[in-house]
Length: 244
Ligand code: NDP
Image 1 (cartoon, helix red, strand yellow):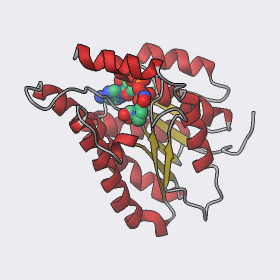
Image 2 (cartoon, rainbow, N blue to C red):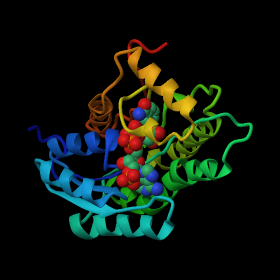
Image 3 (cartoon, rainbow, N blue to C red):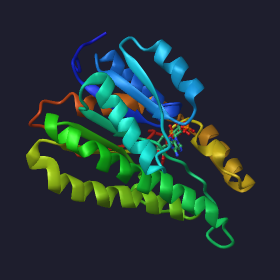
Image 4 (cartoon, helix red, strand yellow):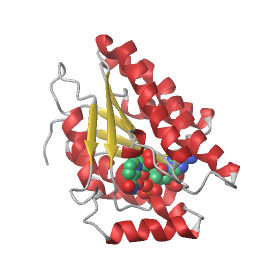
């Protein structure tokens, strides 16, 4: 175990699976104390048991502003500070725009975009106190839109816009903003699709390449947050070698 993050406190949203879970473990392995937040409490409890360093499992629904404020407050109350926010919670419900179930659009915008904005809003005063880092988990879909992922892409493009404004507002006050844009990572993300064509397309894509693992993204996050204070890694695009 290394100790590059000794004494620092991180809060990871969407830590109950996939990229968030791997990132929480990686930050913990670097010596950070980590609040792990999501809706599935059972998953968080078993994650906390695996951690080399102290972890706090927090019930969080990022679409609920009160829940967001409570999670940030609970992190600061337990660990005394907040240095790193990993804004990772997200859902992807792909399908054609024509005839779409609009409730799925609402869910994506509320979770991926508004939810991550609420997290920044609640965390920023604490991050400014300590010269912290905000890691915004976007996607290649935040750089290139494609058919059948219009709303998901819109949320991720939105994250990019918000993050750049945020960066300009806080960077000279010592808060670093990092946008991470993964390509295809093997996680539960595609399993929430309700459109069978989209499920089949995701399975076909996964079978066609050596996908990224959640740990690959966690390593990128650790790289960004362990740089010297004067170095701001603002953007990391990381795709499977086999993904065109
Ligand atoms: P997972 O489905 O494994 O993880 C998504 C996480 O988000 C879960 O922990 C889930 O927890 C959490 N979450 C969903 N809704 C909410 C909510 N309302 N409140 C709090 N937490 C919520 O997928 P990934 O690990 O792949 O996804 C993580 C991030 O990475 C997402 O933002 C995704 O868009 C992004 N990404 C993923 C890629 C991939 O190929 N997998 C590629 C590019 C980006 P719970 O259900 O317990 O609340």
